[in-house]
Image (cartoon, rainbow over all chains, first blue to last red; front, top):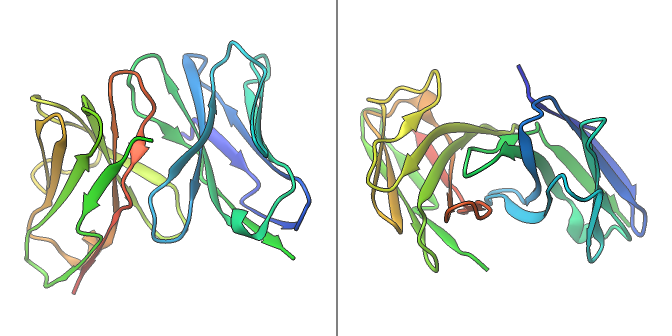
Length: 112
Length: 114
């Protein structure tokens, strides 16, 4: 049973375009929703995270949109660059220091 | 930002060998460390959760005697793959957190068993 569903599996975006990755969760106890960026042969790096008390969080070119009633959250990458080409994972966890539940990942390719 | 160091980054060894992987938090005290396994083009699969000074909590299907986890200090956890076989070849990643702070990941260890 997958608790966090991520889509699309892969994404190709033109340089300068907007990359959008979506995730949906089932467990209403989740209250922490991070996004990780992973390059080949490296560990995931925390990109941006949100908690359910806000509907949007923006850090530079990266924005998380959160819809609590729909149990969905998404990552938007504005002005996508070739250096953004990586695998992105959404994740979720409940209160305290409980393990993260990861989505299956989205392989993003930004082409010039 | 928080730094988690994982060593070695790559190891190749013969079948039957035991391999130890270290995970260190360099600039914070990691009350909890997590060990993950990742197959090519797949997501991270949690293997176990380790709290300092306590026995690790293993996920269903993960063999405790196969994957020995020690978290003896607030800055170090080790994963030992005992009597490794080719099917244990994978990318192993640790993460560490302090209290309820976000998890920070190491750069992973590529284990190849011949």
